[in-house]
Image (cartoon, rainbow, N blue to C red):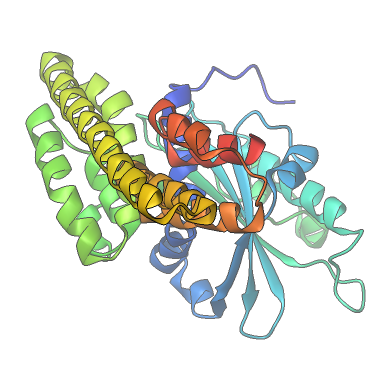
Length: 336
């Protein structure tokens, strides 16, 4: 059995990366950049994330794990297990753990997702490593075994995982529109000044690649995690970013008041209750878009359309100002 493991370097770091890898674009960019030969055979229009409850029952949940699946061009499912590894020491038995995880997922799939002849689906294990030191553990479980005579080789397990070392990647070698490229640039920023330069360039980069919804998770990550690495300069940048965020929130509140005033005047003129409800929802959508980005606003619209009895709009507006991330906001809206 593996020895006692150290706690993660930062729960906030785990949460930030989980927010990135819970998004389809990050998964697509990861496969295209680091497994292009496999990506060439995948239909990314079918990419979907498996429910968290599935992973919870299958794995031990000591790490931030998530499971996606995508169809191959031949119509078969490929499952993608992503494990986010932030330990301060390298787990030399990672290959064994990933083989165990693969078997556990196959076991969970036995009930309803085997092939017509009972075949197990393809599964690609991926380890995203972000520790300070280079990864030295083998990626093949066969390398953990003692040397064996040729007669035994056919009976020994062979199972590999795809390793991605964020700290060791050269961002310039990745496609410029790749999310992993920008994550690596932020991770490797040598000074607070370099980090701030990246922060200032982020909106234009996200606009250019049509991913404005990524601004919120990037900024949350920078403010709560990355600034802590750079001493006094990092603390100064953190204060500056928080002041800017407070200013933006004040502007949002003023906008909410103005929109509310305009809507009240419209409602008084029309005297239509339906118009009041639709106006309140439009206000909530606008605030959600400004606070968390267009992706959150679109998802809020879907939740409101599908659940007429969803949380009252004043409660939703309150959540917009209380929640720190789009994921937390949408989760609490659904639970309300």
